Length: 174
Image 1: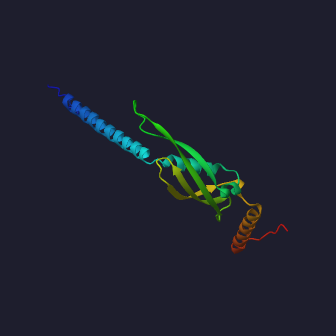
Image 2: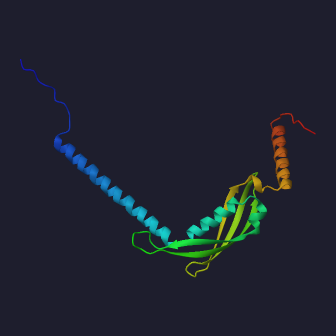
Image 3: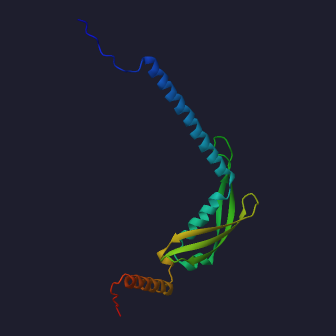
């Protein structure tokens, strides 16, 4: 009697080699695409000389402790380095002067504010630039005590109205 071995399904050596080659080729192409995208992003960052100064002004405004200081506005001198960071290339540093003004507006949400920021830049490549942006921020130190009380009272009244609409008893602390 002949004993037949069952045929097992497996990949041949040639199929495995082709699969590994295709995987390696795909990884190389994807790696090159990521490298190109990062290089393009870096070049875009270097082309906009005001991106860093705008970020510096926004950070400064958001670090101020009181709303009055924010609305006071101010000036800031920002050193900016131009040139490529590759070996052997020269880099020059210029100073950009930023003059900023801001208006702070309360929102319907407690301690959340909208800051309308306007910044005039001078210096750098002798170009003047004006940018405007809106920033939404949460700041507990910016609240006006009277405004804070009004918002709390409005929220308490809204809460009582909802309670009475549901048929619950409304308790007054007065």
